[in-house]
Image (cartoon, rainbow, N blue to C red; front, side):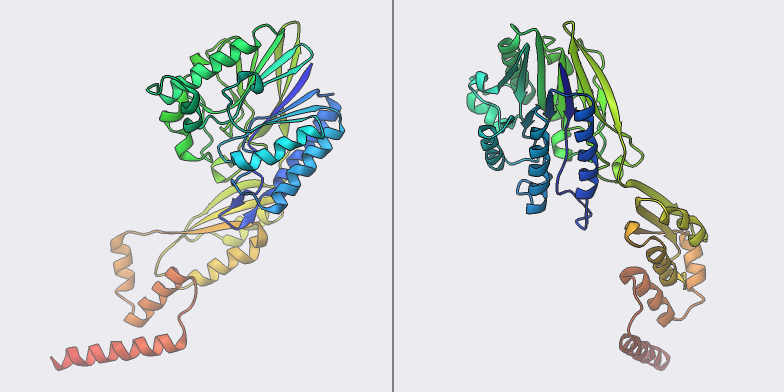
Amino acid sequence: MRILHIADLHAGKRLYDRIGRNEDLLYALEQIKNICKEERVDILLIAGDVFDKRNPDFESQGLIMEFLTEMNALGLHILLIAGNHDSYDFMKIYKNLRKLANIHVFDRPSANLKESIFQYEQLKVACLPYPDERVLTHFDEERQRSYAEKVANYMRALAHEVEDSRYRVLVAHMMVDRAQIAGSELQSSVSPYYAIKAETIPDTFQYVALGHVHRNQRIEGIAPKVYYSGSPYQIDFSEKGMDKFVNLVVLEDGMAKVEPIRLDLKRQLVEIRLKEGEDIQKSLEPLAKENLLVRVVMEVKMSDPFFQQKRDAVFRILGDRLARLEIEPVGTFQETKAETGKMDLLSLYEDFHRFKYRSEPSEDLKALLQKLIDKVSHETHKA
């Protein structure tokens, strides 16, 4: 039996609320579809965070719906659980798909454990959508238990439901304490408070398919094979340089064999630092020829008269490959003081305006400022 484990699609993700990432996701999903064909996958596990927002835009909804429809046409079963970015209420809409196809959606942990189990031939999959604390508390008799204890208790109950099966898999969206986070995860949801102790994951399961952490990895030091598949593309610049994978899981001879499969990226995320005085053209032109999204950190002196030209050069060379330009002031206080001491007040303001507003001050503003400077100077001399 062959399973493909993916997670954290984050359809609708935008970099800096400006650059849409759906084309990067679509590129990854096309590869996933081909892997399912070539590897003759029986079951696709999607371990949560299908969408980036609780109320996804229509484009993102359509992208996911088309993907699920295409996967269903391949004749495989699709198990989809909700993540912390997914809305319980919105995921109910997708639950209705099971009436039409082999798509099985689990929107929230259920007090009726049998509703959380998917069975296929000799396999039972226990499904644990993102365990919201309020939902767990609703059906946990011991309300004083910690969050981690409630989740551990629920996992033990799920393990009991599948222990009579030859093959036993858990798919869950949660934070495990030994996981190495990527940095792009929602920080509040990867805090120690929400971290599940790795040793509390029951060894009943031969494979545990996790979502939530965006770095592909195995959780070491425990008996079951516990993996995060990671996100299928670089979500933001905290993931720059990070390779992306999906996990192919082969169940045979009572065991799980795991093979991470590397995905190509539509656009790599790259960060470059431009030192003060560096040749911008020479440094950026090679990047302009690649399929990248680039964050530029440019070191500048506040008194640099060519600041605006340098900024414009970055935009001109990189074009739509430029994701963000960040300006970092350099130089000691003494250096800045020495340089600015040689300049008149109007010139100092012009440099400040360029630095602060990324534009030249208007002629009217400069004329008004010069009037004020002349007036103050005149009053000072009178005194």
